[in-house]
Length: 313
Image (cartoon, rainbow, N blue to C red; front, side, top):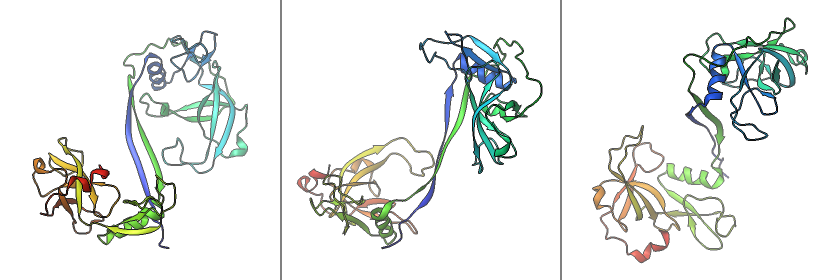
């Protein structure tokens, strides 16, 4: 059995959100080295603050300054920090209840080792050198056996408040297409298209899934399909995609390759966009070194009869 493919993949995008008055005050306060919580209807002070009372669901807005010192309520040691975490050396994840707060804030504690960390230990905020109005304005917590600082009486009113944030969302993972799609991808490198036939309903799935989604049985019989096929349905694209060097308008179509039990999608070229039609017979066009067809073009054959592909729409 050939080796199953795998590859590292990254999904990354910036997430932009606006801030309400409570979150705006909290993040602006961090920029100014002030920690703000919010008081609930029953008198508790929540840090980080939330906009609605978790008990009554009532709107909250009574801002309360708390101290930059506090107490570790629980912790876990992180021996191997990952990219983007607060510290590059081993550290402890801690929940810290700041003095004056009734809830705990999650952040990193800079400590020489797990033996130096314990529940109940006093800590203080280590502020980042450059602050922009983000949770990273708290660089980390650090052990603190000195004076327990108190709040300064800040009202939560700031000039030039932070009104929005941009957070980078990123997911790093290793993807494996599995046995069936590995065979499909390997065949494409030889400019062949291979599907798998269901032993029950006899439908040929392209790309193969390793199992028939209709019958629920495993598939293993490989069937080469195409290379020619029939346009079943299509759409005209009029908006240019970022980083895609294709002039609009162009056509994307569902193409039923000869011998396949369902249609796959591909771009149609070699013909004016307004001449593409259902039933058009097409063939793949490969570029040098490509692992899949660049596009499909008309073969010059007569259009396929509707009855030959109506079940594949």
